[in-house]
Image 1 (tube, rainbow, N blue to C red):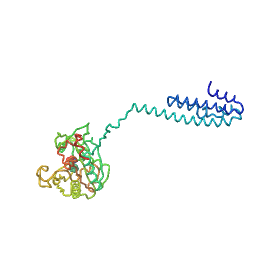
Image 2 (tube, helix red, strand yellow; image 1 turned 45 degrees about the vertical axis):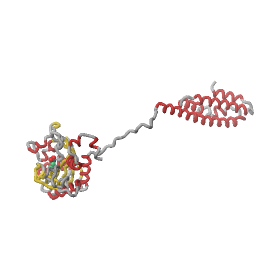
Image 3 (tube, helix red, strand yellow; image 1 turned 135 degrees about the vertical axis):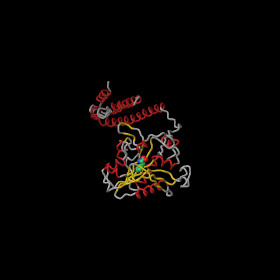
Length: 363
Ligand code: PHE
């Protein structure tokens, strides 16, 4: 017989004033509840117990009216109500306690399987370092940003038009020979310098312009201590009304003094680039011997760093600027070389071999 039935029959059979009978009924119930709880083997079973005895609507101890008060003789209803509440509270507490025991049991079982050895050494997370080339790019940008320049980028896979043609180097121009590169497909090639960013920027923006453009460039070169088929350049240019060669000299002199130190001198030697006129090679006084002459500067006292010049008016034709109104200067040079001189790195290959012993020195 179900407990509900048993309870009802017992309650209905109670005589007037049979308080002892009520107490007996609840004592029996209490014993049964404790026995059931002790027999629970899992959290699931605990939940089933809760629903059966304490479920919100149909729980045996919860549905007070249906199960307890209705079948009880009127004179005993008070006693039944009081004891019912007591047993119910007790059942709730016991269930809570039993659940904690069950939880603790499964925790012990879990710990037995998943042993944690607190004496094992921890995992060391390797901390990276900035690449020397990136450090230099950041610093060059910093210096030019302080002069009101902005930073532009261009694609590394560049068209023949931007890399050569619009820089005043038509198909058969001999200056192309010194910049042999990989042709990717058709008219596309790995850019040989950052100068195409001059054209791209002038196409999309009007003067006044003050821009630098750092990035990777590629050339057909056999790797040795000073050559790599991939390296980095920074391009810089300014276009406005009345820009003169003086502005170029002042700008680069200021840049090199900030980058290598106040004692550095700059020197401009006549040169040739198809996209600047006049053109110059820019040297700085040797930062190792201050110009006295040493192995690093091949006893000359000077170190060649940048190419530069006034932007050739022919370029304005390609980007539809009025060449009578505007003038500008441009310069470009190797970032890797700036870094090698700064840090005393003698082999450019070290920059690209990914050797952590080398790279971790530049934090
Ligand atoms: N683009 C040239 C080179 O790669 C450098 C340069 C840039 C020269 C701008 C003049 C003006 O060698």
